[in-house]
Every structure is written in structure tokens, then in C-alpha cells.
Amino acid sequence: MADPLAVATLIVYLILLQPTLFCFWAHGRRGFLGWWFLQVFCFIRIAGNAVQLHEDATHDTSSHALLINSIGLSPLMLAASGILHEARRARNPAIRPKLEWFLVIQYHLLVSAALAFIIVGVVQLESGTKTSSTSVVLKTGLAVLFISWVVLMFWSASCLLFSRADSNAPAYVAGTMLLYGILVALPLVVFRIVYGAISLMLELNHPSSSFLASTVAKVLLSTVPEMIVTIILLAAGISTRNMYKGLGRWRRVDTESVDLMDRK
Image 1 (cartoon, rainbow, N blue to C red):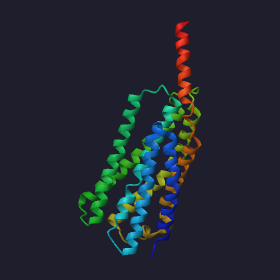
Image 2: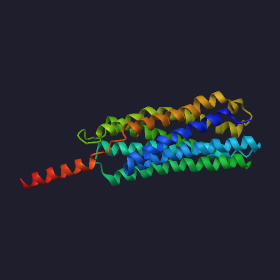
Image 3: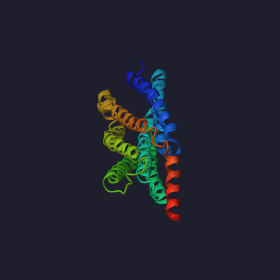
Image 4: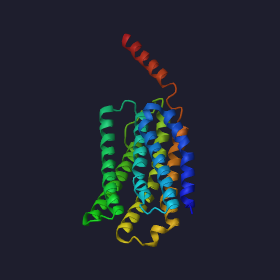
């Protein structure tokens, strides 16, 4: 019998994929990073639940769904960091691009390192080749993932409280709205990190634990928080869909004003 939760989750993310594609189109190249990774996250959740339904139907015990679902959190955090990058540039158009991209790349490397550790640990776990290092690898990946969340949360809060911003920038209000969306969504990601850590450690040490089979725990700590985070980010993205309209005209007017002042 098909898992009702997997069916419901698959349907929900198929629906959420549509506004995600719209945000990717509406925000264009300035918002490419954030909305691209949010699409990737939706695709991973769709694929993970589709694989789980296939495994249930064919009585396959290979648990490829566990591997796919274990890597899903990384694109969600990269999506939040990409939207933060967009918000920072919107609130302060004079921000130094080379430094900004350096910070973005460093954060991506941090999340990628966490993902690599988790993939190696899960592959060892599911292939039955568990070694003494499997626990260390998984714990390292989860620890780096949590550090990535702390960095992103601190970075987002500092942008709102301490970073320079130009309130006269044409996309300042929209950028601030995106920033608030990230700050509201990020605390919910902790529930998913905690659930992932508990689940993987139990898979390693106590695979027969009732917690792993608990639908309530999965819904409350994993499925629902991820959906709410996605919906919050999408709400912010749709609300700011027109944030770049007229921006080119504003830049032309601003340039003409500077030229006129120089002549005087």
C-alpha cells in the first residue's frame, strides 16, 4: 500500500514547484541563485517521494529514498543564502561585488562539505559497509550543516541590524521584505536538522527504533517545517516579483543627474 504521507508530500511539492518557477522567472538573473536552488529542493523532494512510492510498490528495501531525502536540506539552505544575496544587493546597490561573491562562494563550499560528509555516511549506512568511521563521518556532516545554519542566521540578522543599506535604493523595500522572509523561515530549519541528526544516528545505532517509523515525528519535525519554509520564501518572492521593474530607468536618470552635476 502506498504511503499516504509520501503521496501527499509529492502532490504538495508538485504544486509548490509552479510558484517556484514563477519566482525564478520574475526575479531573473539577480535572483538566480536563490530561486534556482529552491527549484532544486522541490525537485529533490518530488524525486525522493516518488522513489519511496516505487520502493513501497515493489517491496524494494534498498532505501534510495533515504539518500535522496538526506541531501534535500542542503539546497534549501543554499536557496535561503541565494535569496539573502539578492536581498543584500537590493538594499545596498553599492555593495562590493567581489567581496559579496567571495562570501557567497565560501558559504556554498561550507554547505557542500556538509553534504559530502552526509552522502558518504548514508551510502556506507545503506550499503551495509558500516565502519568505525561511519559515525564520525555522519556526525561531522551534521555538525558542519548546523554550523552552516548558524552562519546563515547570523549573517541574515546582521544584515538587518548592522549592515549598511541605502534606504533610497529603488529595490530597498523589496530587499527588506526578502530579508524578513529569510529570518522568519530559518528558525524552522532547525527542526529539520534535529530530525535528520536523530534519524541518521538511530539508523546507525538503533535501526529498529520506533522513532524511525513514527509518522507523527516525521510530519512535525521534517515534512511540515520544510513545507512552511518553502511557502514563506515563495510568499516573499511573489510579493517582490516586481522589485526590478523600472530599475533600469532609475539608473539612467541617476546617471544623467550625476553628469549634470559634474557639468555644473
